[in-house]
Image (cartoon, rainbow, N blue to C red; front, side):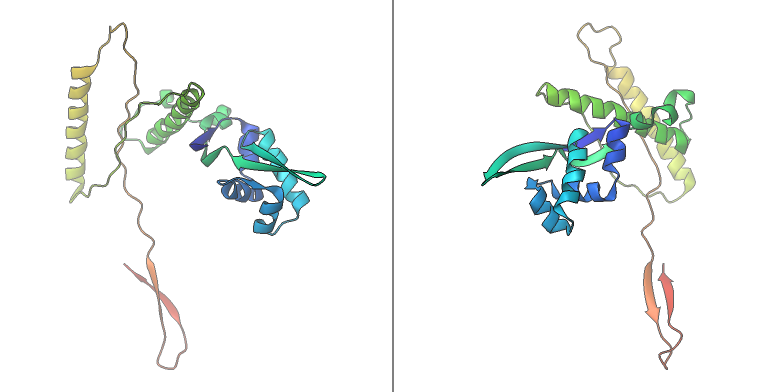
Length: 214
């Protein structure tokens, strides 16, 4: 089982987005049969079987074993991955193309780059898994707070300069045995935490209101 599988086939993407099938995939992080799933999900076994066949047809679940119980053969299945991500390839005709424009201050270009990363790394993971090899990647994830917009701009400029210096130092344009790597550096605002709601009442207990705690 993969940690994350990237779905490229549009039909498989459509199948995975069905709410019942999403619940089935979550349950099948551990092997299970249609009978077991029906009990957990509170659904008829025939309905679970219908959705299992669709998921198996699109390669999202796989057979683990078959158990003989009297005159019945029970099929035990498992999801092919713990999590799934839909690649822009599944929407090829409308997928964002980073080559259409290149603006390092554009949030849309950042999204296009992220989409390309999902597509390319998904293919690399699948290839490495088929070849039973490890995939060499590196990532940094963190948060930084800036006092002012000017500080943010200065940080971005210094970061760009440092990355360019490192690329100039290590890039080998003519190496016979070298392997090209994709480098993406991104900076974007962190999402704000949802405001906490506080219920207040009047002394008489009437006119309850919700207030935001900032």
